[in-house]
Length: 231
Image (tube, rainbow, N blue to C red; front, side, top):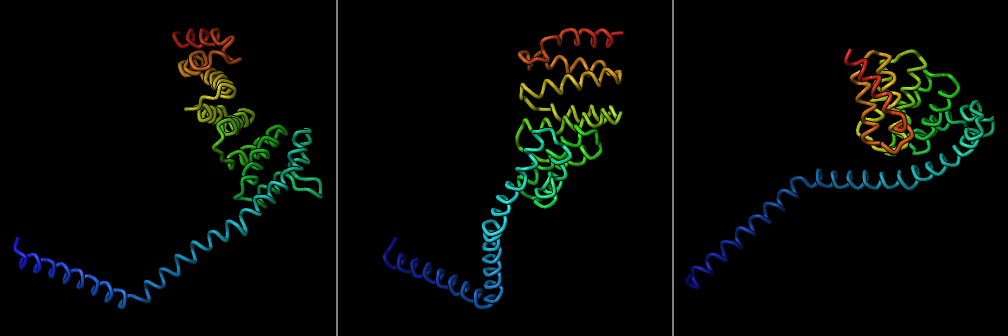
């Protein structure tokens, strides 16, 4: 390439860049108000989020943790009425769940309230509060879902109970709680006359949870379900 052509090419590049910069400047001038508004809006949103997190949500989480402590003590003492409703000076689980909705302690209060209602014989409220509970913890999640199944059993709604037992055990692998609810699912399936499904639950206990307490006598449950299945 000759020097003249090279210089000419470089001049074209410089002209193109200059034109692009000129267009960008023109665009900015034409849309200055919109761009400024968007920038300010983003600043306000981001700043507001961090302000919410540090000035409101974090202190609220701490306050919620303090508020649930007394109810947890009553729960451990099996004082379920006080655990649920408080003692006049300290919040119960119901108060914490409502007052601190959106916090970790508020979510946990739903779990405690549901279990407290279940143990108190108030099965409809047990289902309501346990259904509100949401957790990534495998054990608590399985127990909460399985406990809803227990409540439906007590309400003489075996179809719904079986559905929740299946939800509690589907895809889960915890050896302490999953076989417990698998066995319950098998028993309900047998009561419903679905012996094939019952055998499936029992066989999963034997295959996947062979060291569990439920596995110790699972062969007789498998034999019973398979015998009835083949009739």
